[in-house]
Image (cartoon, rainbow, N blue to C red):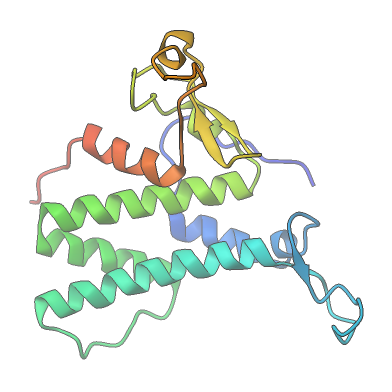
Length: 189
């Protein structure tokens, strides 16, 4: 399967990306640790599944449902049922964040961006981090280093600022926080 490149610009909806990853086409790819590969003690016969990808999907789903639960608790509305699908869950999380204020909106925006970017990286699109400026020097053109699962700055002057001269590097979570500090929130209408 070839890696599909998305056009430059906004990162797609995290729910859509997770739904796409949560398909046999992606789950059965031969990357990462797998389960059910027919080896000793697995029972054989089942399709191999990419366990790292399943864990990523579960982590993203749990983060959104946990956010919704905390938002409901803060609003005193704990009895409402959880949304049935990912898209509805993200919509409810965004709505609740808007109702609860700027801190909640910032947290939700960072989480949605992080989930989107991590999903894109699982799909093989490393260009998604190149569009982000370095949190330290603001140079656009970070490079994803998959061996360490971090984005590194390509600016040689930025790297010279560290004690050992190694390139500065950031996790996707750190980039999400830096991005939300940089991007102003839209005012609620």
